[in-house]
Image 1 (cartoon, rainbow, N blue to C red):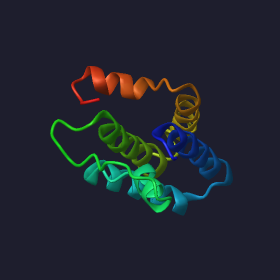
Image 2: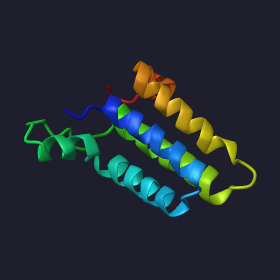
Image 3: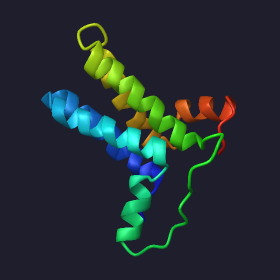
Length: 123
C-alpha cells in the first residue's frame, strides 16, 4: 500500500536527485504533477493503490482544502519560484525542500502540514 508518507520520501528523494543531476525538465514534470494533485485532489498514492487493486476512498475536492492538498500547491509554488523563476538567487531552496520533505516522510512530522492545519486546512 502506498501512503502519503512513502510518497513524501519519494518526492524528497526525487527533488534531491533532480537538483544533484541538474534535471530541470523533470523538475517541470514534478511541479506540474504537484499542481494537478493540488487542484484536483487526485493524488499519486491514490492512483497507485487503485492500480495495485487496493480499494481506497477518493477524498474528493472540498473547501476549505485538505492540508495535503494545500501542501502540494504550496510545494509547487515554492519549487516554481526557487527552481524556475529565481534560479540563481534561491538555488538552496530546492535542496532545503528536498531534505525537509525526505525527513518528513521518514519521521512522519512535516512542519509545513502542521502550519497548514493550524491555519485552517482540514486534516
